[in-house]
Amino acid sequence: MDGGDTFVGAFLQNANVAREAIFSENTVALLNQHVLSPSSPLQTLRRQFIDLLSTAFAMVTPVLQPLLDRLNTALTNSPDVVVLLFAVVLLFLALQVLAWMRRMVAWVTGLMFRLMFWACVLAMVAVVVQRGPEQTVRDGVVVVSKVMGYGAALRDVWVSEYRRYEAQQSEGPGARAAHEYVQAGARGGR
Image (cartoon, rainbow, N blue to C red):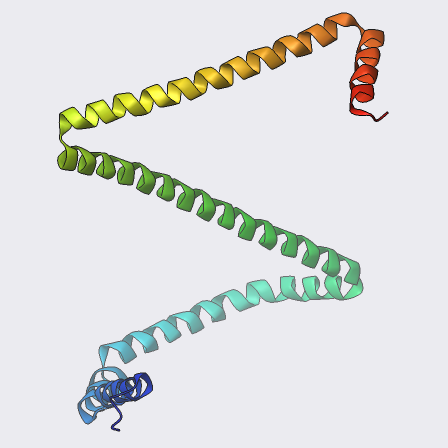
């Protein structure tokens, strides 16, 4: 059995090909010439950025050093403020994460509703193409009539229950208690 017959063997062969492509002599030579060489543009930009940072740090240090010393002294003398500040920062970070999660859930929900809408539109187009416009209209009329019949039955049940509730409310509290007693007696319980 050679190494390509199984999933693990195929994975190892692909990993060897990737390793050879990444760490080949040509790749190492290109990295040495264009990235790691002191005269490469990347190294020149890195040196300029480090020089800029050191100059900025040298200019800001005399101004900020006394303020940082006072802040350090104040925080060392009152550890309660540090704990309170830590709790506030932790609460702020937790609220930021929750807000991010809320935005993400809202975005995904909107995306899902849009996808469902366009899937329904596509399904309707497919039905029209497959069955023809006349048969689709006939099927639509049948579906709408079934839904309307179900809605009418639901409306009748709701209206009858509402009338029964109104009748119980108009009888008053004593009559309602007697009505409940009669219903409980009919079932054999109290």
